[in-house]
Length: 171
Image (tube, rainbow, N blue to C red; front, side, top):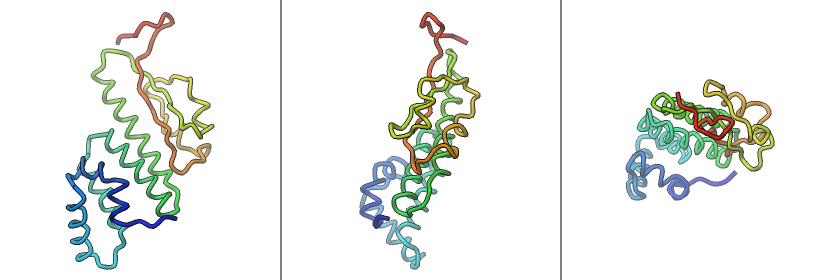
């Protein structure tokens, strides 16, 4: 398990913190110093979990950002806490699926789902060349007991459906 510091937080998640919370490195350090005053017994990891939760609140409704945040949480849990991050992988996949479904509502095309597998994931690779109806629960299909990666890099994509001649299908 790796050591986690404020410098690590900035190096790993600074861009995301900047985009979501408006933090630069100096404001992150100031925010952490204030947190330490209020919570002197808390660790830097505790502070980071607080930041993750603040970023989730700030990005409510932005499913793309939330998917990235949940993925970061899964990686953080695995690398810096030595625990499984699978529940955050599930949330990341669900946020991606929610984004696709919302985008589908305004699309004039028929959208279907596709799995873009992690190169090291034989479970997801078995679904690589398949297409699924938009109603399919790909989260349960991807993030289940067959998945052996604590923080996978698999993705769910929404693609326009084509007929047998390669023409796009319209609604």
